[in-house]
Amino acid sequence: MSAEHGAGDPAPDPVPGPTAMPGPGAGSGEPVTITVCPDGPLLVRGGYELLDGDDRPIDPGRATVALCRCGASSIKPFCDGSHKRARFRAR
Amino acid sequence: MRQPQPRGPLGEDLLAVLREEPGTPGAEARAAALPAAARAAVSRAAGVLGDDDVQLSLFVLHALHYQGVDGVDDRWESDPELLRAREVLSGALEAQLRAELPADTVPGTPQSVADALFAMAAEDDGPSLARHLSGRADDEQAREFLQLKSVYQLMEGDPHTWGIPRLSGRAKAGLIEIQVDEYGGGSASRMHSALFAAGMREAGLDDSYGSAVDRVPAEWLAGVNTVTMFGLHRRLRGAVVGHLAMYEMTSSVPSRFLARGFHRLGLPAAAAFYDEHVEADAAHEQIAARDMAGGLVVEDPAVAADVFFGARCVLHLDALAARHALARWEAGESALRPATAEPSRRGAAELVR
Ligand code: FES
Ligand SMILES: [Fe+2]
Ligand SMILES: [Fe+2]
Image (cartoon, chains in turn blue, orange):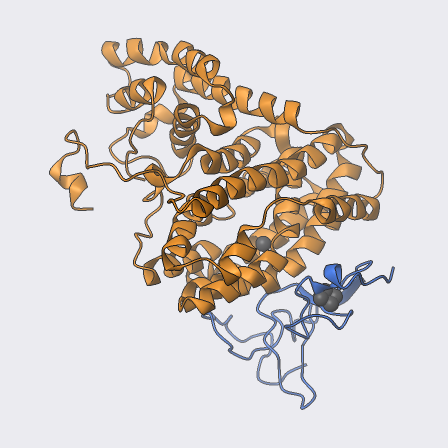
């Protein structure tokens, strides 16, 4: 939960670009679900917050994100569809 | 959008009707002749997918249901004779697509539907415009590509949005989850159509909807007409879902090539549109395949086969359009239709737009 982005804050109106902000549902208390997509990414929904190794927020850019679990993506931590060409297999 | 130029006898008749005021005896008489003119255009065509008179006329009839056509009375949208003419054309389009595409056996669980759709996408061996743009296309071909794409991308998401009230449960929620992203999460500047418009402006192109229609050949209009036809018919709700699913499933990897090409050509705004699609559509394809398409197959088995029909249409029509453009470029020609002189019938008010 992030102190700067409580549930009562006004919704930000982001513009394109690398503006760091937590997941749209962060701090909402909404349950987080993670779907393990067979042969593909982890699909994350709900009140998650995405942080880097130094605990800085990573802008997910959208409410539902696909996180790479095959290691082949060029935009990690996000999936870019490279798991298909990499023939990643994990059900 | 601006009134386009007709491309044959049907388009001539249609645009003449649309310039009249609905309800007047002259207009009604001319409108009543349109369904027969549409049937004649279909029988003249060797195949409707590549027929310019048919595709342009259907595109104009469809535009009445989106944001309209400049100088055309909004009441024409629901004129019964125009609707009849539209059904003649879209019926011929649907019939040709069904005749050209194989039928699939439909699996019974959401995950097996997703697996089958991913396998269909993986087996596709259609020509790749994205690879050409990535490494070889020159500046002029890149600008042509943006114009060809603009007839869909400047209204990105809109045809599939018509599917929302026709679905329920998991399929509906999945479609909405995707569409929210297409519409920029509610931020006008982040709407995918707005990102594309910025790319057009950067390339020195007119970003108003339909500005490029006169330059866009039938093979490219056919793709937009097909998804609009799916969106406008509740009967085809399976196809609109399958179409969006395959559209998303064939987007993130080609978008990476396209982003690379536009970066190479010094067009960062167009590149940003495709960079956004690399990331967005890697998530969308998972939602689309399992929740939306898989959910619909389970909830609404009557339209399950059409989910696969809609998906196959994407691959089929993308290949048709890509083959067309690549053949032209390989021959050293433009992939666009020739620019025509401004017709005399247009008034000064329209010329200043
Ligand atoms: S899981 Fe999709 S690129 Fe790694
Ligand atoms: Fe999009
Ligand atoms: Fe998408």
